[in-house]
Length: 504
Image (cartoon, rainbow, N blue to C red):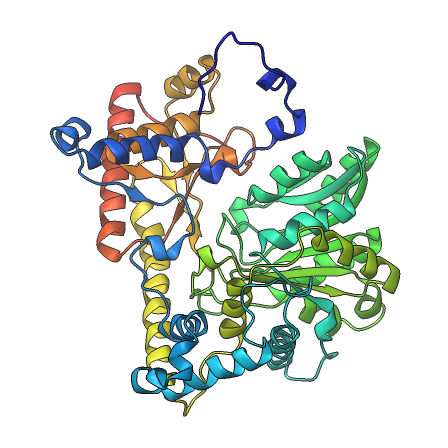
């Protein structure tokens, strides 16, 4: 990469797209960049560990399970191995090495794909995988409500490169100018604001209530919508992230019905981010898909509320982030809109094949009685138990740190603790033109080797400060996290004075 110089060039920061420059993605922002620099210094050895005061980083900034010692899932990786080396199926080696159901599944996929895993697929992905996803959705929702809802048409399903690959085309189809707005929960996953910035659309924030477990209130929805329309914004859609990222809450069915009623009354589309649907830890909490809620409410909602729902191979218990597998389901869109929407992902030809196959094996894992079932069940249960344990212990440990409060983690894989800081610390950060929680997070990685993300990167009520942390590292690392954060926060208080009290 060439460094900046006085040489005359057509493309410079001043001439770049203003939309590109406006797009921000805090998950891989300045804190993560600084962490990479520190990690490179530590890798050199010598006096680096002594200089920093720690020998390794604890990375809590991304929901990337397999970067936190989570082993790849045996069954899907065995199937993929055979598909990538089909000669093992042909010469009989596979039957000597792999369980019979792995061999059978690989042969089934090979037949469905005609063995062509290096070519383009249809824009919406392989038909047999979309059929498996349709069956998965029906089984999930029918079991939840205890009755039979409308069947799922595989033609309404689009496979994608992760859930992110679904968000881009659907927002492209919704947003035409800065006059078009999309309601986004705050705090939010920054993918949505970044994409809206690139498209030139307007973010219409609705604030989650931290005092009510990051709940969605009807009053906040109405206030958010009214403020936008008074400014001449055409609100096109509302985004719902359930379970919540970065906030870790799980929405109750009654709250979701309120959102559906609101969307119907305002005639706006619902975008339902459901990538953490397997990650439910709190007693008494249950995942409800937005599709289940819409159809379960009956007429007029079941026929008139338009819904985009998406899921991913990256999260849940499997954590296959790098495979980039995901899907999008459309509900209640007329044929002409549907056909126009098909055109958008077709610009990128098709989703990657291995991501499609991973999604297939997530929605259709080994069944009871099959040779791989017991090992699959053991892997699943062990990982889930670890996540559930850390979801309980991390907030408990953080609440012991002076100036930090933390809501329970009901689902997903994150906590979003609130930090109360000394007023002098806040004033000093603002005088430098920096967000106080960003300064806090930068200090945490530089002084303690703990990588988090400032709440300002996700949005928060003005005058409050937060950080996002995952619960993915092993138990021993998570115990060390609380210790390091406690030591760091106490040093700040010792230097700057007591934390500023807040009525917020």
